[in-house]
Length: 436
Picture: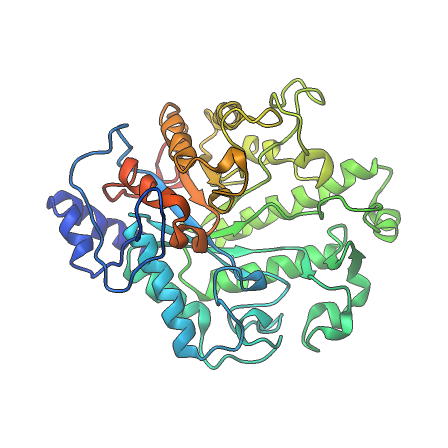
């Protein structure tokens, strides 16, 4: 299995005492700029891999990852329609940045809008590759990404969005191959976009087919969902009256919506692990399940609640063991009066205790320098220092890759110097005999 060979490769490098040389010998580019100034990755610079342990006693096994968002050309491809050679160059540059940071995983968005970064029998090629949905880019994008990530001993988490169709509300702009064009009755207009109705069995079936097609054909390490389930609240309620009338069966609408999402998560988990037991299934939900004011078991926060607002009962998914890992997006600072990072990290650590579900934390690299609370370049480093107090926390994932590469205010360099000075091996998932 691919995960075993990659783990052996990393272990061999560490065992040989070659942690510093192993990365530098690969010609890995490094982050540029000083701590105060920041700066982009300069071409040709070499990674610095100190052999001394991190001052906070960083764990030798931990997840260190970054999201690579394709929707809106956020991270990659940086612009639609670039040549295959240019796209490949951009992608490998991001992977080299991950290695320069001593990371060991990337979370790549491959189904952003009911489309695909691979040749799918169900959905069209993604518009974010060529600029035109359904246009063949001329190469197997996913196969290329997997090959390059695995060559660098980076785990590849294939990131799917189960319900989002488009960022606009015009079905006619979609490819004729789009399931949304073929089945407009599955689609709901909400806000400024189009969404599949999670209450329809046909929609769950499509999402499952899309995921399992990739699981069956490609050597991915994990299936990954982010925080988008039912859409975040906008003006008016999500228009699912017809589905609720057909399938609600007397349930309260909120409970029925949660059941719809639960059904997809549970069934998909079973399908993935039946097909390939070594492939993980993980979700990165919004960072607040429920506020304590709504539920005694909730967190001491006053924020939007995934349970009530997007119908994602994330705590149940953990307690039922449907996930291999959970990566809550804790996109707040330590001391934030609405949602204190420190209190939320402690709350999530308690939720996974004894479950076998691995906990990693989603970190807001994109917010560095955004406002007064995020002006301190050491804020994210402080998060990792706090995380080290909790044995349940197995690492961090940063949103997103472009922000890591930009190194604003020197935050990424500080992270590496303070916490990622040496490579780390991925934790062993509970399903493979690890502690979770």
